[in-house]
Image 1 (cartoon, one colour):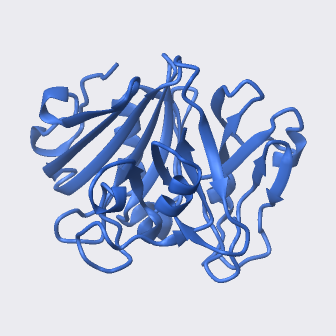
Image 2 (image 1 turned 135 degrees about the vertical axis):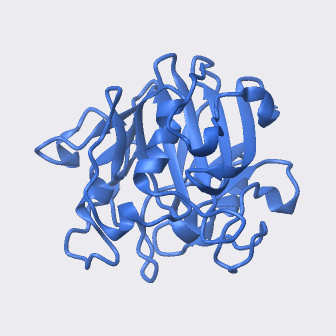
Length: 273
């Protein structure tokens, strides 16, 4: 599934699976983690969930909150999940997603283009994870008529920017959000129907975080044909049932420490049942 990755600094590639810590979460869900001392010329800590969606018993699901924010692990435990990552961008004061969110045919939140750039950028709504009535997932770009025009798809969670579409890396707008290194969360789909959920820790001496272009290269290296960026920064969280530290396996940054206890309360999460 993994290809040789070129373009990484000082020759430290990510294709050698033997160099990753690996653990089966359950059949057809694998958790991998790796600490890089020199990736893109910096220290990077990466967690990856590899989910084989050819196993139809695995059900990706969007857990959500309206006005009351909860942590990723609280939502995952409430839904009796086995693993989860944080979802899309949300209103930190009023709650709810600031991007489009539809669950099981019901529109929960619409794209908040009326907000300031601090809370909403258009490109953060440019792609979405979609789940059809049979549970099949996809990642698509926003149609010209907007997300509401996709009436046949019951579940849509938009985010962005898109990283890879139809096998090609997207050309990114130059702005602070894209060009500065942050903690990142993203989702990608491979040609052989594996869902990859990836977190990169940032904002610390131990892990710098990535630009959007660097983050896209990670998904490209793992042969993703479609991928998108989810909410990052202090929201970036990966949770796995049964692991120590309340199940948090990355290093959330809201407590400004490189540990597992700085989890932020959010509006929605992508969970695996």
